[in-house]
Length: 120
Image (spheres, rainbow, N blue to C red):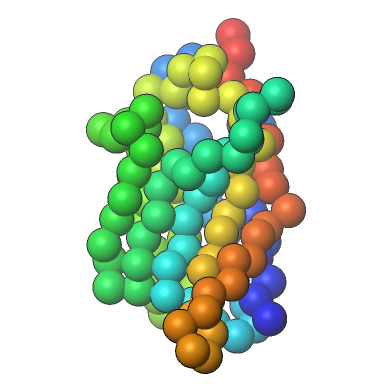
């Protein structure tokens, strides 16, 4: 089992630069990828950014150049630096940890979510 606890978020003005953080605990050694997803009201959850244990990153086109994901393997944390926020970035942001299981299986763990509201 992996537990994820997010922090950061809240009300942010357009153009703001908040930082989200997520701390993982539990079966840390099984995690091979961490990331952030978001879900806006009335929409499906979507990938924002991911980072592997080796540091390979992947971003949604909508956030490329504005968001940066980073990972501290020693502290078991993953962060999302968000810059130049737009109203359309408003969503609940969820931390994700993907764990490898025997026989090639994988399991996704989720945090409880943190709201980011971009509004003036």
